[in-house]
Image (cartoon, rainbow, N blue to C red):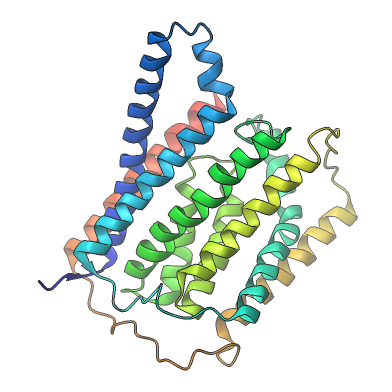
Length: 315
């Protein structure tokens, strides 16, 4: 049976489905967990469900698996031939380069993120933190599974494997920036808005250049692992408060400009690690009014949800 072609409409459907199904899954998992705890007469149910590293890790993994379910549904019902994301060999030097670029991204964008959080503090907006304290080896291993491996694999399959590919029906530049915005909004947190957006641009560019989702999975995983490990190694140290001064501002501007130049260089330098195979992306088709409406509706719904969450957290 011939499968349908992946379009911008499917990108919107996958985006909205990923959000709705994940939220329903979280509600069901939370209800079942509470029921089981009540059956065993556990007294501190609220404490377990709000701060237990094991529970939070399981909840996070269950949510990520819902993203995987959406990817598998799209994969079996739509033609992903133009996106041979698992069929290309990995170049060791190439992946090393992108991993280094990913790690550089953490440092290069740290200044901008500090100023962004400074603004949020100015408007008295709560700053998001790690879902649980990574202060033991057990918690560290739980974080690696729930905050590193699962998100890197499942989120990349959904966003760069499906959503980004569907958005390419319009054009590649649109797909890069729109998928990054969607990736950022998907986190449903004002604090976690700027970095996922910028990091999402990098991941989309890597996907476009390599045509291999494994590069994105590895870069995403290494970045998350770096952050989790840093939290683990510094958990017993008092945090250093960011202080604005001319040096900090100049450093933030210079580093982010270097990062932008690096990403642009990767995007436009066709000779850099150029694949011998031709880009198998199908010719851009005219986007129907129905597809545009479906995609726009999914974005509007997500933005409304994000706005409601932002206002509720601010209040």
